[in-house]
Amino acid sequence: MLTIELPKLHEKQKEVMDHPARFKVLACGRRWGKSRLAALTTLMKAVQGGVAWWVAPSFPVASIGWRMIKSLARPIPNKEVREKDLRIKIGNGSLQVKSADNTDSLRGEGLDFMVMDEAAFAREEAWIEALRPALADKKGSAMFCSTPYGANWFYNIFNLGNDKDVSDWQSWKLPTYTNPFIEQSEIDAAKETMPEAKFRQEFLAEFMLGGNGVFRNYSECVKGKFEDPAPNGEYIMTVDLAKTVDFTVILVFCKHRRHLVHIERFQQVDWAVQQRKIHEIAMRYNYPFILMDSSGVGDPIVEQLQRTNLTVQGIKITRHNKRVMIEALIVALEKTHITFPAHPLIQHELDIYQATDSGIGVTFSAPKGQHDDIVMAMAFAANYFRYGQVRVVPL
Image (cartoon, helix red, strand yellow):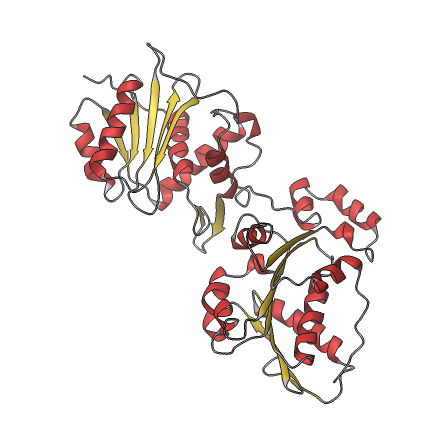
């Protein structure tokens, strides 16, 4: 059997390498040594006769891994290096470096092991549609290594590895400080010149759950409690409609204090029942002015409610006015122009909300598989408070 002498690993790298978990998730600070550990692990699998892949988000990142693996493999005799394919054959085993930017290129081969380097910056579809199925027939294992990047799919699998009820998965949070080969004074110097949030993400390996910078530092807005209606109180009500996949959200704000006093959230409820619910809450809170999503199927519901004794303004959500409303909410939270009681669902949606550059401008949304119904209902209110509306007293 071929044996090779491994380069020296520090203690945390050894801990990860020796752990028996099938799926390992490493949230690492910069210069912790994740790529070196992943390259060694990939090389070892090939030396042992397995088929292993190193997968990176893009070709430039893949090229870095390829150079590292080639350097580590230099002492191995009788290997075949194929530069064109970024593949090394070692006896019956092989390893190959791949890019995840084309999911179709990751199909076809059964794998004993794979690494996803900088996984937080790769497409989730590469894992779900191509790489996870490739591990199935051989019951292969995987290592996911990345610096954190918001609450995306890498954050989700990191949480999976921390769940004691989920077998086969294990996660590690590995700040740069745990790499003894990096002088701590260098990390401290970086801290002095970097924004705090960026330092915590890049060096402390913390998931900064602020929707890639959309809603941050809103803690001063979290105050007070939910309230029953006051006899002479004036309120506004916002409604984000949904029927099946998403949730319908109803929020009621005290008009003068701009404080959230009531929240309802429900899913898979018939339109007729939703209309009754909206009407009942409006009656309780003294017939407030109502701002409601009128996009798509919401339009006829708005029209039906307008025929009753409710004052309803429909809002057709477009890419442009969604941006305007979200920006109004950003300002409202930064300036503490609205307040709301502590509520896990509200804070979760604010934390995961993200902005992405679509190539034609910034778009706002929740991550795939998550919800932003509360955020949108809050954005309706923020837009109202920022720009004002004429309130018509209902008949």
